[in-house]
Length: 278
Length: 278
DNA sequence: ATCGCGGTATTGTCTGACAATACACATAAA
DNA sequence: TTTATGTGTATTGTCAGACAATACCGCGAT
Image (cartoon, helix red, strand yellow):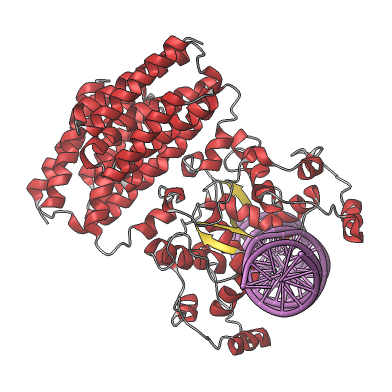
């Protein structure tokens, strides 16, 4: 098989890089980072930097700048500081800055032209369904609003996706779904349970037979990440939720689209209740 | 206002770059591009290259490599040719190659590690809802299948989005929707009509009040691009379609979610018919 | 006041270099 | 013969410095 690369998460920034950025605020006037640069080229570089993929310089930079943009530090239409400025602010090479900016351009957050600079694109162009952008977006002041938006989206997508899965699933896909459902019931820890839960829903999306539904899995993953804090510890609730999942699994297995759709609606209503109860 | 950057479309590759790539096939053994490189550094560089944003070297490279990946030239798990190889094949600098690859990494198509190389990620990680990836994906052998997938997705999304729009639209958003609908009716050319049609549906997504629905507009744009060839020239059909659109507009205006949802379902059914008729 | 012109600032591109390290191969030991 | 160890090599990551292309600003001339 392939070497399994860890997803570049914004939470995996290495301490070294974070240290560099500590006092690198957007509106800093004059940062004396020139000295640091010379010092680094003199051989003081830390020997054990950048082990995790996500902590390479350009990836960390992209996370930092991307987060600032989504957070609203640079509203749409704003011209960003130029590449030389970023380079100086973070004490990194211009190449690294450029690669970070290219990643943000690829996600629709930025665009640029010679002699003008890079500017923040209007929010409609942002690829909010991108894993990283969604993660930055999820750091909004209150997670309530974010969860509400994602949950509403799930109400639109999942019932229909499940109905399609009930019609078109292959036996292999059914096995995946059933196994995830079973492991949910047998999970020893809440974390294991959540992981199996996520796999269950992702497997359904894959089984829907519509390629365009698969990328929406990032929403479900994000929802479960943020829902974890809300998860109940009550045995009764857990058993109830498990029954709801098993109903979905059964109806997909028996290829009953309408029943499957309704079962998903019940599960989502239950989740809504959990959120509202907080 | 902002400088309006043209979206980087794969169809805007400049002839100069295409010429370079003519005989750059994936399985080429030995390409004698070294000579070209020396020649270029001797000052023979074309004076008028890269006018359109999308035709910058890194953007063109990203399009070319991305298209090859999505097309299946390098199946998931495959290790790509290394950066030096790409650089040599296309007679561009390694920096340009790296920036292109970073863009593809940002879209979930690639990942890489030192001493290993860059490999194609499993298809589930691909950000298919990205504008560029979708465009590459749409170059599939038969557009029938692609259109069917997109259209199915629209059936899932648009009725619910429209129902939300009927509940939560602001007056400004309503004005946008109404204007687009009106301009559809008054359009002089089929192209103008399609443009207004697209704006109509995008405005509804924006009015839905759910930020996560907005990025799905790329699907609608893509659908209409590919649907253009199917568009009828019959006056009766056009009038009928216009009436369906006006029904949607009216129900959003009068804030009747259920009626709006049904009106959208009728329109989509009509579009299905147009596709099927071919 | 309007038009034209050059200067300047900024991204785009190229070149060359070194660092870090996964993998393969050769070599040596049990 | 098999296993363990060390060495080499290939590849991405990062840095530095240079020049090209050109949008915008301000100046001068008509």
